[in-house]
Each structure stands twice: as structure tokens, then as C-alpha cells.
Image 1: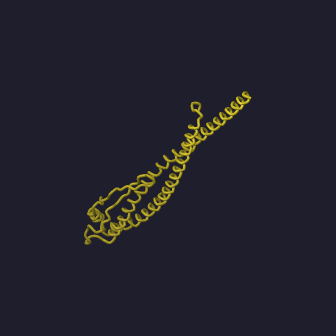
Image 2: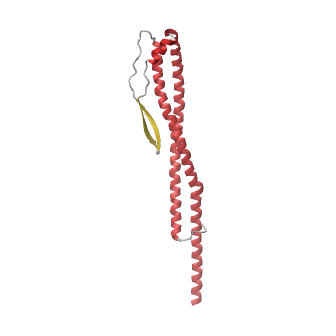
Image 3: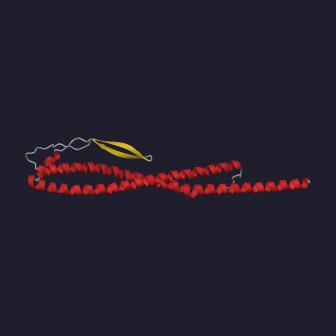
Amino acid sequence: MEKLTPTKANLMKSKSLLAFSKQGYQLLDKKRSVLIREMMTMIEEVKQLQIKIDEIFVDVYAALNIANITMGASAVTEAALSIPKDENMTILNKSIMNVEIPTIKADDKPLKPYYGFYRTSSAIDITVVKMREVHELTYRLAEVENAVFRLAIEIRQTSKRANALDKIQIPKYVEMTKWIEESLEEKEREDFFRLKRLKGKKF
């Protein structure tokens, strides 16, 4: 502030920068709150998805065990190899407070058997159906976990910017505005007393 001249123009500029910084902080603080709320919701969804996937895997392993006993491991392997890989997916993007979040759009084809029924049992059918559920849930889990990761990065960056305004910029402009106002008031008092003395000398 030693290099700053206490003028009315600089006072207006300082007040403008102070108001702008406060507005910026309010917007960043609001953005941070929205992002945190979104992230906490997604974290809860991640927990529920993981629980659901674990529950389905219990059913899958039980059905697969029965299939191995009734059909034999080689027949189960043969049936598994007949099922094609699901690679028909598209990665799309959506925005949450200007944060790009990738979403997976899978080809939702109806499930159909790719193996014969002669040497297979209902246990292998249950396994295939349950694994399809796991497949869909895993897609969603990947989406949400990725979103949580990206939101966490954005929250950290937003917090840094908000804290810089709150702890550095705003106090600086408050002090600058106060100093200019006090300097101008002091100058006005000096001018007043100088004018008063000049008037006294004339009379």
C-alpha cells in the first residue's frame, strides 16, 4: 500500500475489487457445498452397490458350485466360453457444476442362451442371469466411483480458491479500502484546517 496513492479513484477501485472478491467467494462456497452434497450421495450409492454385488456373488458361487457338481467342470467351462463378451458400450459425458462425469451406455440387448440345454442344468442358467446383474451393477459402480474421484478433485481445487479469497484477497482489500478512506479523511481534515487558517489570515 506504500506505492498506492490514496485517491477517490483508487478507493472506488478497491471497493469494487472487494465486492467482486466477496461475490466470488460466495459463488465458490455455494459450488463447494453442492459438490460435497453430490459426492456424499454418490458415496452412499457406492456402498449400496458394493453390498448388492456381494450379495449376488454369493448366489452366483452357490449356483456355479451346483453346476460344477451336476454338469462337471469341463461342461461348465464349455458353456461359459460359448457366451460372447459384452463389448457394446458407449462412454458419454454429463456435467455436474462444470465437472465432466463419464457415464456408460451399454447395449441393453435381451439375455438369451448361447449354449444348448441338453448337457446343461438350471444352475448354469441362474449363474448367467446373476452374472448379467453383476455386469450391469459393475458398470454403474464404475460410473459412480469415477464421479466421486473427479468431484473430490474439484472440491479440493474449489476449496483452495475459496480459501485464497477468504483468507488473503478479501482481508487485503478490506485493509486497502480502510487505509484509503482514512487517508482521504485525514487529507480532507488537513485541507479544512489549511483553508481555515488562510481565511483567518485574510481577516
